[in-house]
Image 1 (cartoon, one colour):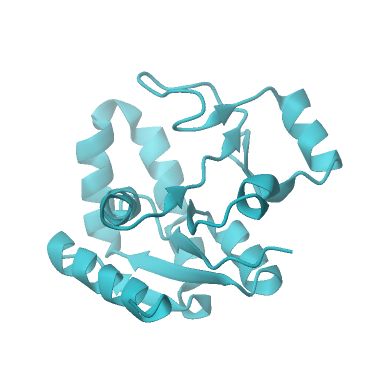
Image 2: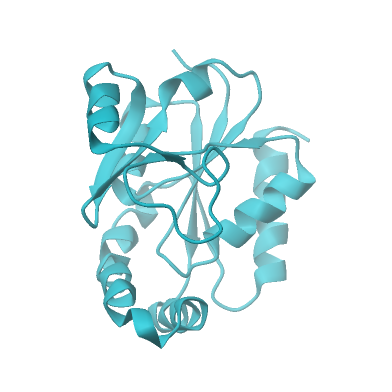
Length: 184
């Protein structure tokens, strides 16, 4: 049983989740949940900081051993959250989850507060193109194909922040949510 309140951030690629999570981690004494994945590390990624990079066999053993709180297969790779990281800490942990993980947590984790970071589809695409470059059109399209799936869970989240126009306003709104949740 996980007794500590944890924060889940979700939303489509390009919505600004990672930027907002980085801001929250710089302002509050929380820790970030480092997911396990079977995908290869990207340039500059560090094992244990960005992800725990594992083999498919290791990941499947974690699933069989019920070591993961939630997991998903995306784009041919597994991604999952270690249950022990959440059970073995008294700190609030921030999670960045896909929509399937959010649905699982909503159903099974009453102590999780879920914040949806929204962004208009055209703005999300523009941000992805700027971040990833034009050479990764298929990757961008794959992420944009998931936009509606993310949109379908908006109403299931505890809070929603629109990050279409102003990152600074969104950061302040998330800080207010955290102050309310933790009575700061």
